[in-house]
Length: 121
Image 1 (cartoon, rainbow, N blue to C red):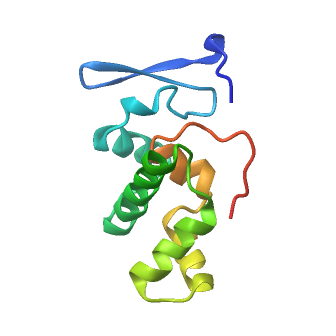
Image 2: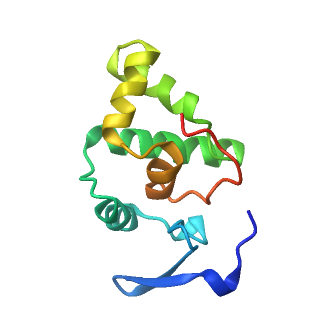
């Protein structure tokens, strides 16, 4: 997705000023850190726990390895293995963690660039 510089907004994170697009995604994924994740999660009314962090770091690792954000189904499979449940139950657990979905919340909190097209999972 091409960022329109006229639609970027700024927010302060400690001593840093971070740019986000009109949907609240980071303009530069390299700006991400756990503090940024906590700020965005708070805006989404999510209190991050160990399961959230596991998914976030799974997503970030896959992005670093492959150069693109992993598909939602990969996050569901990861969660299924982590919890020792089937994929359908993992999907239900995922949506309890991120009620508004993979892109709207998980990708945003994990500091991913907003995908152009996606499945909400």
